[in-house]
Figure 1 (cartoon, rainbow, N blue to C red):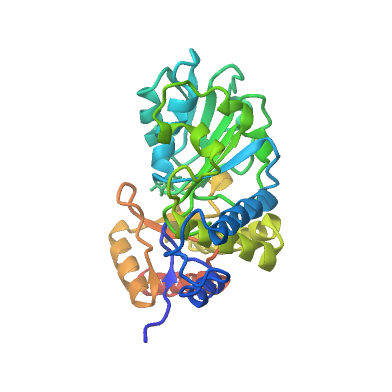
Figure 2: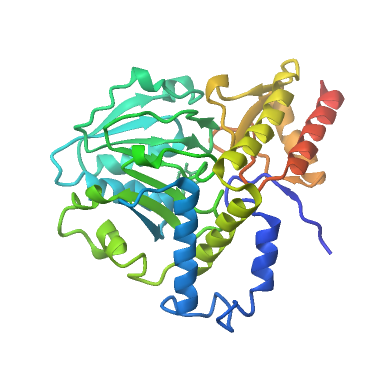
Length: 363
Ligand code: PMP
């Protein structure tokens, strides 16, 4: 028998054990269906209950107002990089503004540039993406088609700690910190997130869109790329990623029952991140955090070793101690510990102990 590792992968990533066990229990016979979730029609009553349950849990967790639709789409957050400008910029005679705080925001810009006028409002590239801007220093123009930003940059590990109050149409890629903390949904025009970090397995991408933005979608878009198709058909225009949506329902139920809501899970996320940052800060320079202190991610903790040549030994030895997937993204190097909602305190403790031992042996 193999044991479950401490899984620090950036996504797909660790899921709550209780959810995995429930899915295992229900795998052959989904209650009320007499067949597996993998085998039933997406038009069946059993699946209807699942997709409605997932949506209603998300609405509860995030206090999503009535005038927003919740969509379950495919194509990952990457497809949203294109769908957003296709639906909201094309033929609008407006400009889209992008705040770029890391690799994902930078990819999003490239797709927008193919669709229309795109302005980079702020770019952290020259600072090696170690920071985020102060909202007060940005011109959030309510006349632009929308203002796009990435709440948490998964590769660099920088995260906005606050959301702005603005009349502009904010569009946010929340892929890597979705449902990890409360956010004021009513301040946003559109929020999107791939499921495979905090919410479930890969397959579904959630889009929360305010109704008035749907009215701006130009006619003539390909049916599958038009938000209105999915809004009008309750995400059932085509066959949805049923298994992913089923697990999203279970994960959101887990947050509601085990934590009560997002404030409590956010407090635990703070605690876990605080533990790792304090291990970095108290290492007398042996470990060096990547992000500036005021924008350190609670989800992806990124750091370097003073002696960068030791980084591969760190990753290899950690792996031998069942601490997996700590290698930083290939574009950045260093170490990255992804500690999403389902990451346990026990696993974070195991990593802290390893960091301490490794330092003693190599300092
Ligand atoms: N945005 C962010 C912030 C991400 O972390 C990722 C995936 N790691 C993506 C976009 C791309 O997501 P997908 O692979 O689902 O297209």
